[in-house]
Image (cartoon, rainbow, N blue to C red):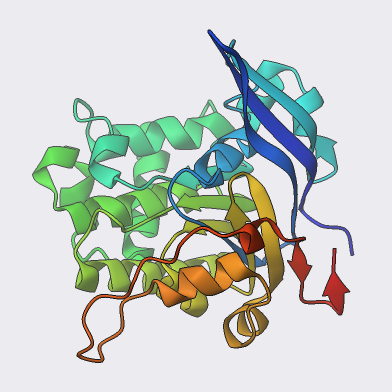
Length: 290
């Protein structure tokens, strides 16, 4: 069966005053329909820019140089015209951002913002139809009073409520692929756990594929079917979640795991030093190294 998303030899560089600065160095990544895949790495490793290239947001940036193939549902996103890429966003693929409060427009009600998303798929959709569908989705994300929320502005809702609104909005058009960039990080731990559990259940129910971007290994272990580990713009390890966590094969993956705080009474973990082992060949958990 062919993959929903295939990324091959993806490279990204930004043009600055001193020349080109390379950010991604030949990323290979794939996601099957309905699969939950995590992209894990520290801040600045290239996770979020990879997601933005998939969405087609960096291809039109004047100082960005993107090369390689990003094939979504049999179509090469990098070769598309800008308006064709724009049609995919919010319809066949959508994104949940890290901070829900800043991602929603404070000057429009939730109902208006839902309607704008739904009309990307059907411009003729009437407001009453939009409200009915939005109410249905808000109920799915366990919001008990959807009518009040639809008439509210984002600043009138809590962070956790706005995150649920974002999840509902991202799934309202039944996208094939959901990109989740550190969702819930801006929320407190208990609300974050509830939100991620809810998202897990919803994407499974809608059979939506997910690229889950995170540095939180505990969350990844619970959420993802498969994991890619990225370091300095390179994929250094890839495999099923259980294999990665039970037998990490790359020095950087082991360092990430060693950096996770543990409730042992021994204090904070030591920060692993960067070593030459971090630049070792990529490890794949399919019988060998690449």
